[in-house]
Length: 262
Ligand SMILES: O=C(O)CCC(=O)C(=O)O
Image (tube, rainbow, N blue to C red):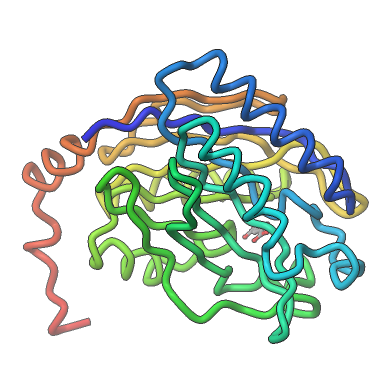
């Protein structure tokens, strides 16, 4: 199965969900106009509020209603799947960093709340961790969505791959100071899991961090099919899940695992 995927690497306004929503909608519309065969658009982490954690109570999306209304509707209008990065989502149980996936009909087909909160960036003080896996399907292709810091936990990624995922989506706000970790971890996750990795980072800076960009699409052999620098841009690549099957045949790591010992 082939999927034509666009990763939208952008800057974000700090704590301004109205401005960020308008920008994201306009950028998606332009992408669809330029690429008539697009299947999927991917957005970065916390694209509604950015990392304005102290004001989340005020600015997070109540129950994800805004993203459902605005991005779900856009997905249907433009006939594309949208892996809507993640948003700050306010619920009665707390505020989550939640990835939401809409299909071409505007239906929500996936939702995942970041499981590992990064203390280095104070997330655990303001956010509630998720409790469940990030599996979903796009045009019958089994996919997983994990968020930023989650890629430092290979056992969590592997759980999704063992459940069938062939494409791993990673929205992020990864700082420039650790860009070497970002690139190495993403490539490692693709090689060890023999899957596509589609990673969407932001650029720009906020009061605490400069962000790395370097969004990437990596194939199941670990080859980088496209990589951005540190500017607003989009990466558009057609992936083919036959590649996953071929790489897994060539080096059958899933048959050679020794789970009885670990
Ligand atoms: O793990 C890292 O170094 C960065 C993670 C991060 O920026 C995040 O999870 O938002």
